[in-house]
Image (cartoon, rainbow over all chains, first blue to last red; front, side):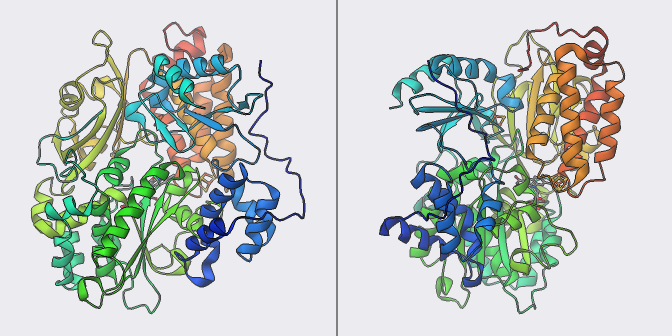
Length: 176
Length: 436
Ligand SMILES: Cc1cc2nc3c(=O)[nH]c(=O)nc-3n(C[C@H](O)[C@H](O)[C@H](O)COP(=O)(O)O)c2cc1C
Ligand code: SF4
Ligand code: FES
């Protein structure tokens, strides 16, 4: 069965001087974010750009952070300061599919515990862990604005709502 | 899930159910952007006065009168003014803005443009919670459509009014719904709240005059300009104008987003008839949190037969608050100690850590709930919870501290039997089990 790798392990970043590189298209995409903010307020683009780093590199890694510091004329510590505040930024690799099950009240009383148990049993991991093949990470998260269609989970940015055990099985089967 | 208006013509939900309701074409066919044209022929003062006359109160949670907020902006200031839409929607139990943003994005653009025109602003930002990425894609398309029709950008409709609308994403932090934390986040910093005063109206985004309004607040503005403030107000009550969206979740047959006129009578009918009554007919109503997780929890006796009207005054009188309008309905299978523990975990997780009472206090509260939930509660724990809440409420840097205290204070007071059961007998004898 899968070996467990904790994902909420935030304080062991491997520090390096290395700077990530990106394709011209990605650089162009990053530049397009800058156009939204006043010239002298480039830092405003930091969160949107951290999402680009996360998409391109799988998680917020040190070379990616070094790149952003250069790109936005910030200190490396400025970038870490912001990156470590927000729960959507993964500071360690996560699985190809990051299943985020809402555990807040409306979902909880509508059957979240059963969904979590089923997902975890099927994948052989606990919440906060990644399967050994790197395919799935399961996290428990707070309310995602789907309380009327509870219980629910997100995979990446996709919403899966009105979950039942059968529906979860279909979803897991369909994820490659 | 239901999305519909009850007791009024749909206004917020006017286009819901129409095919392609998110497109400019459908928006304009149904009167869209006419209010912007009308507003651009009014003076700034007249627009602000209409909004004042409408008795529109902020739909984000605090219920502050919108017209008054707008009038605080120093329009003569040489600085850029900003309109910022709060689409962070992270209050547990709240999901109304999501459907407005998905199904009627142009109504938000139009509302922001009217606000921008009235306050002399050339830039609007919409701050989305990070998880709402698909809604940002929808909005970006809507903005481009509007730009192509000369409704956004330079010299709107050939006038000398120019205004940009930008989308911006957060990244998972409830505190960024608090308006000053939102501005810190929009500037690229950690989402810590700021000292008030100065209020955002004077020094907000980039230390410039800024209005922060909720999505539903801003989508109300085109309706107010179209109908006139007085007429809009009359849809509701003297003090709570217009109609309002309520998100309903939990143990009802028909959860959903409902548009009701302010002053709707009454809360019992709303839950028991409009929302279809209890999901499991043999289970009785036990508790309702009517305004998102941060407001006082109500027990069934405060609702059944009490004629509670759904507006700002009515819910305060009944012992709670409108808040964000998120109804969480619970039947008798729910143990209020466990439901309160769940929300306390939420506040501990979302505390930004800036001030001691909230950061440490929420942690202690969770620790106490943890020991209660494994049967090691002590008879004095209920009082201990209240004492800690006392030291958080009113003593924290921002209202998140109060929001953590209120659910506990009301739960201990209104559901003493649940606490007694845990603290004296230390058993949980119903079907609902906590994840411990
Ligand atoms: C902890 C906290 C979270 C909040 N979350 C939200 C939110 O998600 N959406 C929102 O519109 N307002 C939220 N608010 C209220 C905002 O601070 C602010 O009052 C509101 O955006 C103002 O807009 P309105 O006057 O149109 O309601 C929150 C407040 C606090 C203290
Ligand atoms: S009350 Fe809580 S959320 Fe608000 S500033 Fe203090 S620690 Fe941060
Ligand atoms: S409580 Fe789960 S989405 Fe709101």
